[in-house]
Length: 135
Image (cartoon, rainbow, N blue to C red):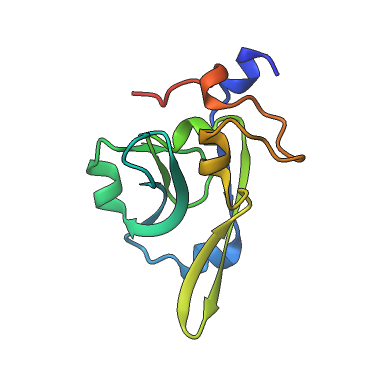
């Protein structure tokens, strides 16, 4: 993959069900959870709703393209792992609780942090030329 292709911002497609479950003042966030004290790059990506105001005001979050869908943001540490991806977001209710999910591999943060790729993931890792989030 060329560096021009790896610099493509992620595109997020939010299903009708997920859009219906989001409240008017909410946005979705691909958040970053650090899993190790010794290595700041070791972490994991999670998807959660937050208030739109918090996401917009925080310098930690970068807005993602969703077309005409709801607002979606990514943590600055998660952003390089999302570059060049077409991500699908869905939501289901389990026992009355909203559960947002994405088409990202469940171990994306850890796999990318340690330089591993799954069979279906042929993108370059963040250390090999993925661009930093826009300012």
